[in-house]
Amino acid sequence: MLDIRPILSTLKRHKVTAILLVLEIALTCAIVCNAVFLVRQRLDWMAMPSGIDEANVVEVRPVNIGSTPAMHARVDEALNALRQIPGVEHAALANEIPFGGESWNDGIKLDPDVVTPAMHVTAFYGDNLIDAFGLQLLKGRNFAPDEYAWLDDITSGRKDVVIPHVVIITRFMEDRLFHGNALGKTLYYGGEPMRVVGVVGDVARPSIADRSLTYGSMILPVHMSEGLGATYVMRTAPGQSDAVLKAAAAKLRELDPNRVIQRKRHYSEVRAAFFASDRAMAGLLVGVCIALLIVTALGIVGLGSFWVAQRRRQIGVRRALGATRSDVLRYFQTENFLLATMGIVLGMVLAYGINIVLMVFYELPRLPPHYLPLGAIALWLLGQAAVYAPARRASCVPPVEATRGN
View 1 (cartoon, rainbow, N blue to C red):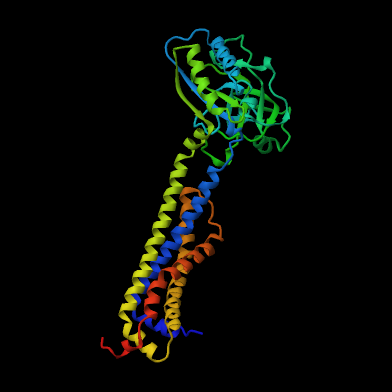
View 2 (cartoon, helix red, strand yellow):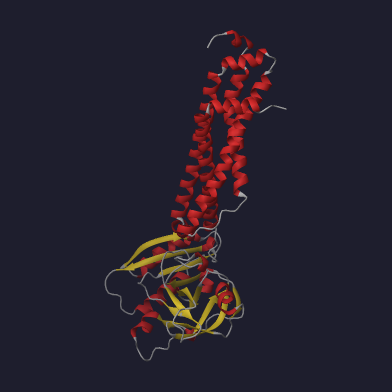
């Protein structure tokens, strides 16, 4: 068994360089553990399901130029034409789509006399969005045709407009507000009572400020008119999305030359745009981790090479006294292991310190304990790999070096 007392004695004579290497390893350990945790958080966030049939949903958003009389008939004409396109299974004009970035949010109450809303939710408007999004109706029923109203009629203040008083909510809302039994219950939205007639699977909100409310969504029987960011949403047959997207844009322009197609895209593009900043941050953190590990490895290699050059006569003496090449190699690897261990222990303390700061100022979760041993193993392996080349050169020092002067 290798005696570590000569190693400790040697390190005492090289305190400054040993301390610098320990600090470098500690800083790398602390930053890498937290960065990997943050990357894992980002990846989990980006993998979050939207709740809709992502593989087969496309959108076409028009912009109108000039006057647009008879808007209701215009929308009906467009939807009927889109539904006739080969490959289109369902079409709707919606105010927003999950992860679309819009913000049609408001507070809902369970008691109209309470000032503070029970939850802030997103309201999806559109024609039969359950089919257009490919949602699963878990409980209750879909809206009846006579329960729909036009949004511009509702907002016009006309006395003859019947405001819808039914709503379909997500399973998340049902569990959060009604403890799993929402059918027939009443909630208040915009001061109006809404009776829950159906429950669908969780649907992500278009814009998410509070991640704990990601699936706080509901659907209202409201017809949208073009404008106000409304977008045509189509669910296609499998493999038909490219053809449908091209044909839908052409059909809308054919029906009215004053329509300008602002954008047309697959839902995968919607998701990519929504998570672009998260993807960039994850890439940046991965780059920082790689850079730190490379710098640390180069530091170990450089310091190991420096110490081998300084100790050639000492190594020669050890070889002359009977030390084998394996003994010398093991000596330098053990020395590096001790330095790495000191750095890792200090790095674990720093890692938790950094995590506490992130928790306080950025509301991030606590660093799971298993990230620390994984980081330690990675740095031990990195240290042993980095020191191997200098240690190998040290093991090749011949015993004759003991007879040479300094």
